[in-house]
Length: 286
Image: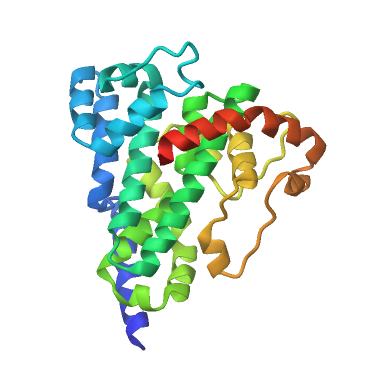
């Protein structure tokens, strides 16, 4: 058994133990998302308490204000320059999504391993692009609540993110990044569902992220599952794990034929949604 296999065995055993105990140890960078979520879910917490937590994280505070000033969420153009006003404008569901995006970005930037950092950053770009499409397509089709769709989009690769973050304690993962990708392939679905449950995600979001489910609905999209699937399909950013595993899944409007959708019907919807998607993407990534 070589060094990678020894560390991989220890890594998998540690994750499996946590899954069996239904108690995941979250990376420090994800604690921000958990704090925001707990406050948002607590009926006894006040907006001032939430604002205090957000203001303590400058990146999250800046992105909250930036999102609140997008035309998509502030069509009348009244300038919003405080975190409190911004949270009132975007709502707590969108704030959860932003907190998760900031946590994932920090995970990518803080990783000691250059290869892992590049992998995490590519996954982060993919996640925020899918989330932005989810928001815009939900707004245009009324198939789902846009804020819920945004959150679902940010959660699409949460299992892979979690495993990248936890791999920091196992340096051999960095030295054999392709073998690490294969390891993640066998774990990420269970881990992702465990993270979603730990975050108390609504049933609608859980159902939309079950990978075995396909888009078999009618056109236009009629539910959150359809929105998430379409957004993943049209995202301009591929999942970096696909490349490492030798996969090249079809992407873009032409790939929609696998769902029985005419690309000529999908393209106008994408065109109509493009500006809103770009506004949300810029707010999250900026």
